[in-house]
Image 1 (tube, one colour):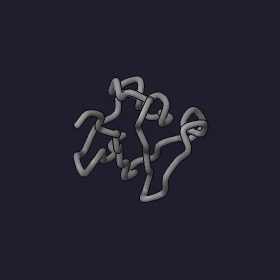
Image 2 (cartoon, helix red, strand yellow):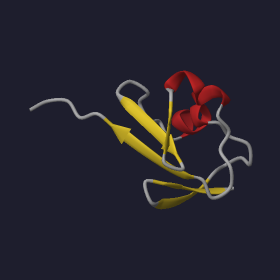
Image 3 (cartoon, one colour):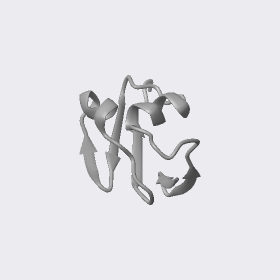
Length: 67
């Protein structure tokens, strides 16, 4: 299955993945991270039950710390 992460096409290792699976696979820190699928923000508590589908547009935004 192929999705887009921040406008970059990515081939997923499995045809069935949730946002939580994606975060673990891509080693995205969950602390300070927001994820939207098809321009809709997904609350972090819903990541384990939100399934990704072919051609989904995923936007990952991570907070930057420091000054």
